[in-house]
Length: 83
Image 1 (cartoon, one colour):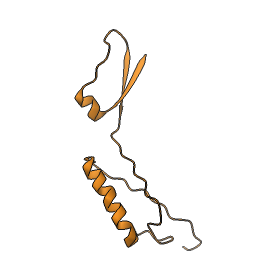
Image 2 (image 1 turned 90 degrees about the vertical axis):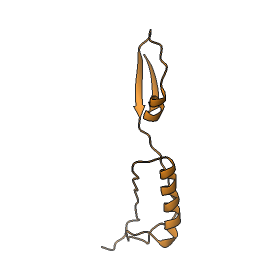
Image 3 (image 1 turned 45 degrees about the vertical axis):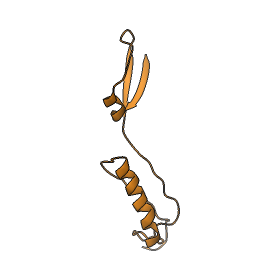
Image 4 (image 1 turned 60 degrees about the vertical axis):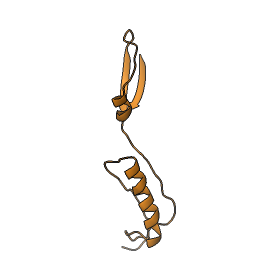
């Protein structure tokens, strides 16, 4: 069985399949992954440094251009001995 993979937006534009053969259509989520590198926060503190604001704004602009419905930000800080 042939498998074709499309995002929901691609499926809205239409998909051509051979009706004489079995075809599996997988719908992939519309997702955009952006990775920021560097120091965005100070040590074990959970707030952004002023120098990180411009890159985060660029990420939000990219999300808006892609018509993102939501933005998920995942971050980590290095482990420390401080509470």
